[in-house]
Length: 283
Image (cartoon, rainbow, N blue to C red; front, side, top):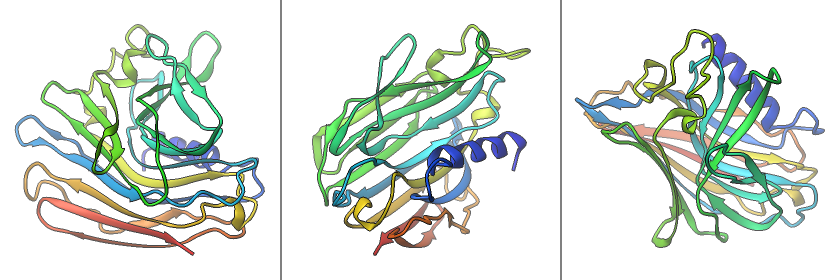
């Protein structure tokens, strides 16, 4: 693990499962580090499906983020968090954006499940010497228990990433973000000392970390958790057969400690072109 990734994962854990909370509410399955591909062999695709769980019996004081994501480390000095994270949300989530040019995050109260594509970023603010959050967000949609949500990350020949989240079988509910530049171009003028403006062609972005999470805050008891579990099918699809050395050691690298939390089981299978990682959360 690189020093940058160690800092990143420590920050992720602190932000996710709440050092201010009385216990850890969430769970994560992962993680693997895989190549994104190249123009000669083709670009790899990162995809997942999961079913929407039932709403909690009680929603007071909770915020839920449920997702499949990829993220990058080793970017320029002023680039910190660099996460593609379309997500299912409830409570008081970060679920919107001011859009260009500043991509300021927006929060709203949500009493039923909503989802949207999202690109979450943290940058070093040189003026204040602090970390500032930014987000790009796609169209927001409602969804209900039992519907299958899919997430897909694809890089094209022009080195533009497309982040998609939608309801399987319903083309009217598809949320999309196009990321032509890392950090949505926010580091064009000041990437950091000795660094150039980042591009997806940079070596720093030729691999990505892959995992899924139930990021749940305010889990006081079973009644505050989702009322049912979920089944994930995460898929990493290689553009060229045998071009990826599959990581078969997928584990629950974040576990819930709050009372009433879910159990889980993980398995994987693969061939020369695709790996499936199955993650079941249940009671």
